[in-house]
Image (cartoon, rainbow, N blue to C red; front, side):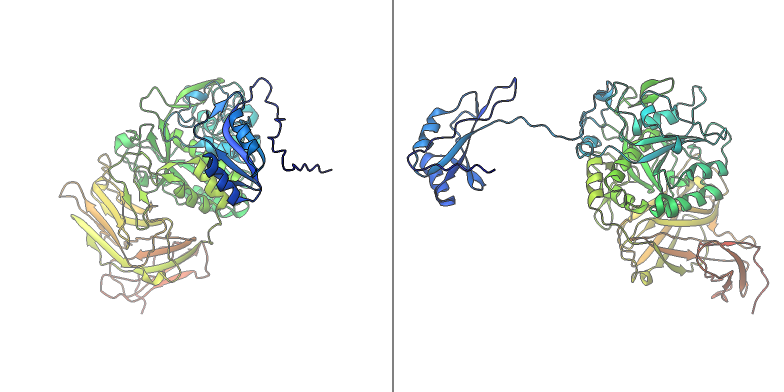
Length: 639
């Protein structure tokens, strides 16, 4: 049934107020009127002029007016204006507007947990914070997302974790049983703390709230025993069709002299995770960039955090300054907080023995915050691939107030730093980008091979190559990798930098004064994210420079028997496309060389034949990094 009321001429009276005020709340009248006039917009504007009202717009068939001389809020109707509008012949109906009380029927944004006021990095206590409240206000709390923390175990019965604990995302690889409960000692709190940052239960009156407080959280006990390649591989491969995100806050020693990374099995687990995990969308690996800053360490000497398959997360203090422990390298993609400004104000999370702590810090604390934010993005768009998320993280990271002298614009105008990557991660912006993201194309590879006459590295060695032949298929980049083999008398004195055709220079490794090794780099892969979205067309330049004693010696290569000097940039993808450059040099000189190879990737050739050399000291080979040498090279001349 529809009830329509008409009001004839001569009975122009305001409608009787029928809306009751909210119980316990008085009705508040505003200096604002909704009016219906006889002849539409022209009469409305004439009415405003006639009475000195401010015309605020139309809400068909009514018009909105206000009067600046009237009290903006009052407990009684303005009877003077009521009478004036009642007597105006052009006014068919009007009503003075009253204040309405309305509440959002969504997630309660601010948790009631007693320690949430201490969570300064997410409760708007500083500016900018991680903007997590905005993501929550849009309804994203991690629901439906499963994460696991690869660490020293998880106190699964902690009252602030138990409701979100997921046994299917958990395992103890140190004791070979499904229970990740840590061994209670003073050193095994790490995993429980990291897990609480991600998924501590909200609004339960205990501790604080996790970033993704409706996500499911598991724990893997793997660091409280003998750590082996197979243990790491098992942890990285746990339930890849069930677990969405793996968070890790560990790696090789941050002593400023170690160069180490995943073994054969762990490396294969990473590749298998991104290609097969989550139904082919790819497992998400979040990694702490490292705490070796006080030892002048560089995270490009850590093969976990510099992998293209991981999201490397750096740290910043609440005041925007770099923590002393924070490492730098161009593999860092984004940054979150780790401490406010002093050691007394750090990260709130769960602790062993059912306790809470506000003393969690380091890049160990930064990575789980990022993992929680990625969980919010996956709830917003579960179809995101592992590469999609890296694109979104870059777009949702802002330089903000982060202090560093090395901020620079890359070739597409994005500011980037070796300390912070693309900046402070913004959860609100991340979920916003996730809801509108349309995806990337599958990865492809374009291989370009060049030859560089080998020289010793005295003060500097420069290697250049042109990759214009790849520009037909690749117009924009993702990661750039450089695989380098060289010998050097003091490895830590060597600085390596890569420059793109668009003018961006990325320092792949800095001076490491404690690294006195004479081993050099043996097929070591450096990685940079600083060229993201650049066009690769043109000449790339690799610079190797001695910043130490002038008597340092080394080369690429030093000729002792057969030496391959191989520099590969196998992943310059945009839209998933890869470019690789290979610089190969050999000695002693041979007319030709046959290399029997094991097929470890695409292709069906089991042998690579080196062509006759263009000079007595060189041999040009055609090979991709998919192939591995399976036998000693045959050094006999082949005509």
